[in-house]
Image (cartoon, rainbow, N blue to C red; front, side, top):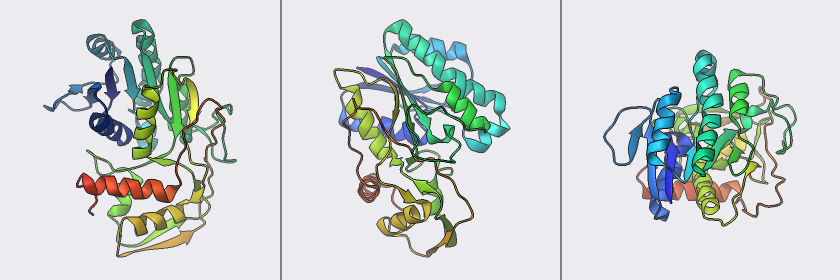
Length: 283
């Protein structure tokens, strides 16, 4: 099977590509936002629909995994590009996949929701009001055989160690805030990669929208405390803070999905062990 990962340097895309390359015999390619000379790396300007079409036509992947996105402040600052990359690109990839009788797995986010209620189900209509939320909602593909995965991710920034919560926390010293009124039931990027590995080889394709989240909810303060313990982080004191109230937790209601998400402590420990084995555990 030939698999193309859009943005193999992204938080999710990098891990998915790395994991699949180590655990499958599939033919793998990934795109990069920069021109580089690495095996299986293909330069792609995701804002250019002609380049996107040519790339897919040349590679002819059986599965396209789309992990690219302009997030949060970048989406607000580059609104036109956000609509192109977050909103229009996934729909174009689905159309190209239809043409080749292949399949798109698109990674979306819990940020499509406002966060005033929590336990959002697949049937709930996205109500986020930021540029990021609106553009990401626009990009969600609902029709078969394609799959949109809504989730919240934690993991190492394999090629861009600056933007994720984990990379940020590993660099901290002194006192940091941990929000006690912000529940979280997301997953690690390693767990996402395991899930993708599981579903791509299933005889019956999972399609539509699925919420990939843990049944266990912890708040951001508890998350940082678990990270501090599991990653052996010293010199950091986490102060509980209730200045922010936000609940974007997800609930999976899909009866056709039997994949079990572990508890956070187990996911974080497995992630730490993976990072140690790949020389990425230090700070």
